[in-house]
Amino acid sequence: MYGRLIEMVIEWSDEFYLYNLSGEVHRGMTENALRGGYNSNAPLGYIKKKGCIPEIDPPKADIVKYIYDMYTKDDMAMADIAAKLNALGYRSNRGSKFELKTVAYILDNPFYIGKIRWNYYDRNNHQRKNEDEIIIVDGKHEPIITDEQWGLAQAKRCKARKHGGFGRKRTSVTAGHWLSGMIACSECGSNLGYHRDVHFFNCWKHAKGVCRSTSSITEAKAIQEVLSALQSLAASDFYYIYSEQAGAETDDLEVKRTQSELDSLSVKLKRVKEAYRNGVDTLDEYRENKQLIMARQNELEAKLATLETPIAPKQNRKKVDFGEIIRLIQDESVTTEQKATAIRKIFDHFEWNREKQQFSAFLSDDIMSTQCSS
Image (cartoon, rainbow, N blue to C red; front, side, top):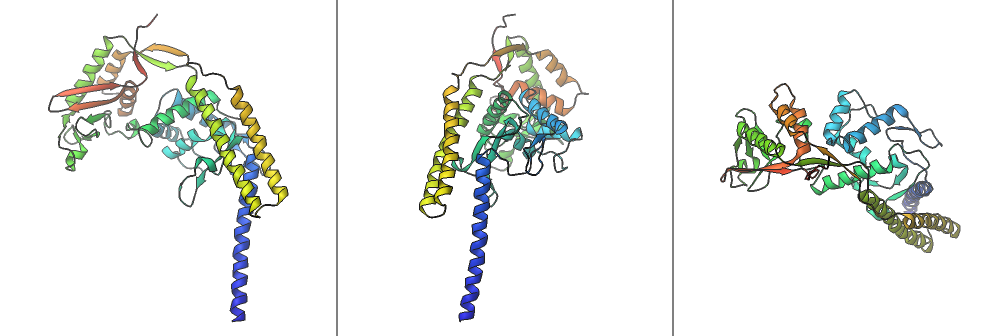
């Protein structure tokens, strides 16, 4: 019995040592992150030597800039960006091809604007941690992306998340037809699937018995309706409006990020105090952690006080050449991807009501009806 008892004590002691060591390592890495240090491998665009601040890797940094330009300036979907990078022969740090999730990670990583993000993802549960657990502080490395372009990218990412997932419209690279994922059923709102063999679009929920309406439309009629909508727009005063520089939305995002980090630090301060009271940390450790957190709080409060009142973004007007889009659609030599990309810049989606024989077109949020001053 004594032998078994001693064996159990030794096993428990080993287990406690490993558990305590894991906690000490995590705490040390957290303190390093609070000081602006980086604990992980450097992301695409940077090189990190042991014990040194990550440095920019110019060739790969150009890939990151290219991704942000395609997303914010060319309005490309993330899957299309990944496909284009792969077609050009670019590869990730691990040498693998780019995927939608790879592009999403790059667009969402604040490391590219000089920030350090730590304790972001729970690998055991495979999900993002709560905001009060995530640490985002100013890093010591040089940024690759400007705050303005980061703000534009985040505004677009937030807009896409509101539609669910990575965006409600099917990307041009995965489209079987350039209108795939663009025509919605008037009865249930689901997209009409394209059937290549018989050349028509049909509500996929009707095929499963969920939707009462057939909502089917032939490919020829759908194309004719889209061309008719474009011809009507060509005779009107619609212009493609785009923002040349970030304005109110970008500033508002910066205020929200700063306030969110302040709230997170308040929670961390309480946890540090609880750790001291429970005997986990010594008095010296408590004082050191408290000073680090309060120093960061003072920096953020000073930054929040200096943020300017948001100003409306500067707008440039550019008239859409609907005639060119019509010619592009009618040209059989133009690829499906090119047609899909062009049509998605103008229209958000279409809606087909078979009973009323009504085809409705809904413009993209970037299209506005206004008289051009020039």
